[in-house]
Image (cartoon, rainbow, N blue to C red; front, side, top):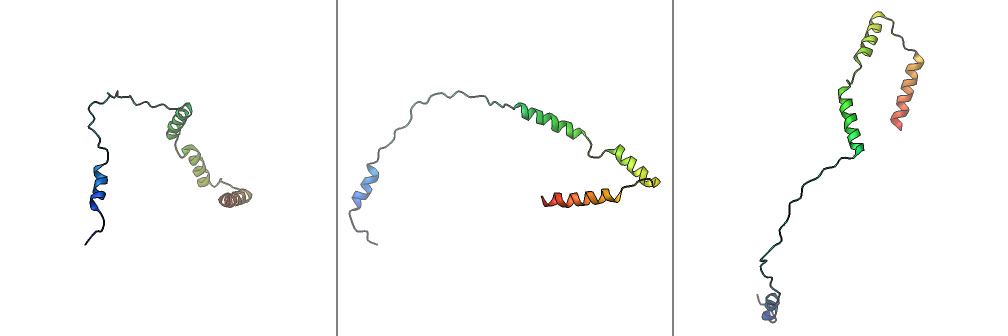
Length: 95
């Protein structure tokens, strides 16, 4: 393959670039200490989440009362309350 033109001019471009010298001395870098700061709101959030972890998900005493009333046959829920809860859950899912 033949490349027309003066190739010496093309290679001369690379030779004419300014050469960089070696860096002889660098300044000393002082190490910095990492600092972590937590806002008051974040601290409050941590306290609340720790307190909530200690609270059980199920109120056992309330469940025992309901189980006892179901076993004895004294557990009554009005139909209106059931219907209200169903309607409310349907509208809550749409929102």
